Image 1 (cartoon, one colour):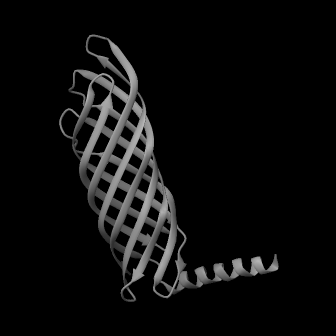
Image 2 (cartoon, rainbow, N blue to C red):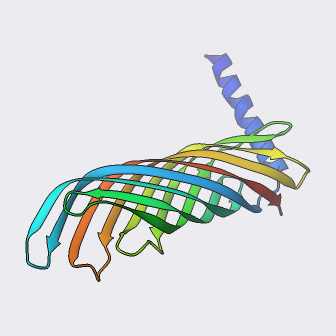
Amino acid sequence: MAKRYLLVLALAAGVATGAFAQSLWSVGGGLMFDTGFGSGEGEAWSASGGSVSGSVNIRQTGFGVWAFVDATFAEFSLAIMRGSQTIDHPMVGEHSGSVITLDATLLGKLPIFFGWGDIFPLLGVGYQLDIAPELELYRWFTPRIVFGVGSDLDLTRNVFVRASILGSFRFVAWDWWPYSQLDILGDTTGWGVTIKAGIGFRL
């Protein structure tokens, strides 16, 4: 038992020493890929007053750019992506089209430092908003619980390459554009994957 405590203390000391040895703040950015899917129940009302409910399936994929501001134990990032979305609804069938999506993510991180850089588990929250869906497609709002792992590879003392792979549990709320003849609402849950890579600069 004593050996276990000593090992934990040694690891904690290594993390703390590395953290104070590094500059507190950094900034950077790069490229990203994001995909997600979900399913749930939806309901639709027509102008005549009729309604239909049933199972809904959604998919969305995007490529884009992201920028981050980073402290030792936290990362905040903003991204903009262009991609495609598909929704299969019992009343209107399957629709697909292009979309532009904004993404904001706040992650806590616990870096473990090595001679070449660091590795850090990640846990936090995120939010995605479709700002330019194709006409007659759905608009999505997606709060997310985000988790994963990242790594920094030092190129110089103040320049590094950052890469991360993230999973997410997604709560997708969506509605039909107001000018449609249908009023369609729904909520789905699902999963997603995000891959990011970029260059960072310590301040």
